[in-house]
Length: 231
Image (cartoon, rainbow, N blue to C red; front, side, top):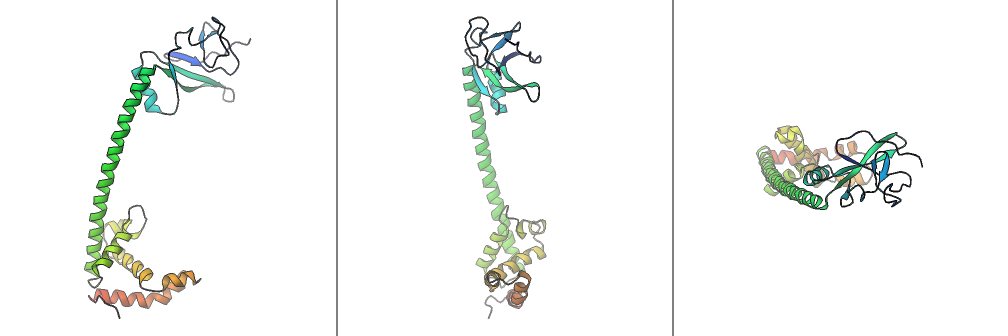
């Protein structure tokens, strides 16, 4: 039987997941899924006094760290990677009670994160409402003839968080006249002209905009002048 490669020195106990079939050198149990090397000879976890520990696979750093903190006895589990010619960590062995306590701590953290996400979502919603109201007020200032409900709709559409629309640009957040006017122009173009139908019929975008430009300017001119109904 070929000897097992000796893992590099680590602080604490080390358990190996063997690549080949191995039996315990003391009780002859096997083949072993995990073993401990004692003076170069394999020992099963029971003979190594680690049989009461439970395996926690790698992946959750917080749970692993807390499980080891809560366990009086623990061990690192490694397996040899032939391609890389090195032992790599697979997880840890920890006490079952320690794992349970660690899971409780992580669940408490998860609940705290959930509550924080909810608070953040409510805060963002309030900010979005205030911003949309300010955007709508600026529309009404620049275009006093724009109906109040249209101004609210345009502001709400332009300022949707994460949409990438003009209201979320730097200029939009600053409520510049150019950004606010761009949002109004886009709304008029899509709502008050046959622009969308022209696009659907295959008319190129620039040509479609040219065809409806006069209609857009008529509506904007009326709204700027305080005229609500455009004839």
